[in-house]
Image 1 (cartoon, protein in one colour):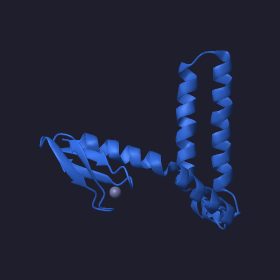
Image 2 (image 1 turned 90 degrees about the vertical axis):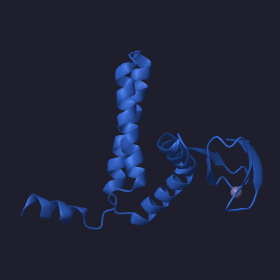
Image 3 (image 1 turned 45 degrees about the vertical axis):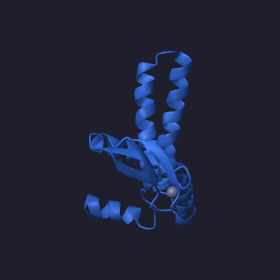
Image 4 (image 1 turned 60 degrees about the horizontal axis):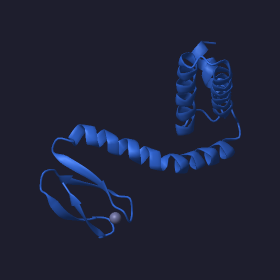
Length: 137
Ligand SMILES: [Zn+2]
């Protein structure tokens, strides 16, 4: 049997990767890199244990047969991650369109609103919840 077929057979009925998997992978990489720079023995040991824990948990989830439970975990992770994800996507847009636009977050519903730059003080109305607020652009 070819390796690919064997791998396919092995993964049958197992959960596989999801967003939480990628987060754990990222955690592992970041902690490993940090532990290389922080040479204090105690910090180094703690970071190492945490990074291995993240890696083992990641592998355990991928090969798990309890798909229902893994999906529930991923849903929990996505709820926890949502505000960070929003923050990162806002930063990305700020870098990309920052020369011509400014970005504000609606204080009421957290919707991200893009307004043209250099118009002075303007009243912004949120397209989602109609809440309006004044900002300098
Ligand atoms: Zn709003």
